[in-house]
Length: 197
Ligand SMILES: [Zn+2]
Image (cartoon, protein in one colour):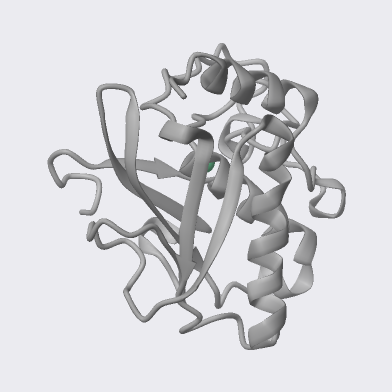
């Protein structure tokens, strides 16, 4: 339903679907990058995972987002908001919902024009038991969605942070990448090298 809204780009994350081994995959072109190489976001703590304290949940997002600073982009946490994530209101809001449509783990939604990103909101599914069981899975999903938030599409290479899990052999949740891989960073730098200052 959300994806059908005209003018919106919905980047969908990782369904736990068994692999299509060695399938030919194509990387979609990026919708754009952030002018000035800054992604400034606010946090709505409502519905954060009950097993993860309020402060720990916020710190997870701040720390995981900053993994992309290796790419040369500033990930600027701009404090709390009570705006909902997923609403196109001109503010980049990161938040939680107990569950998401189609059993998604996380979803990034936004707007872009002429190769420039205008807005990116991320919503994570906070009530998934797998996240409590495997915090490394949650952290990987968080880094992945922030990758979408700065304009990256899915990687066609398995084991990247930006891999669409549905395309790859089911990974051990304990050994998922927690930081962008060299290939993730190569794709990110390609996106921001052409970025106007
Ligand atoms: Zn994704």
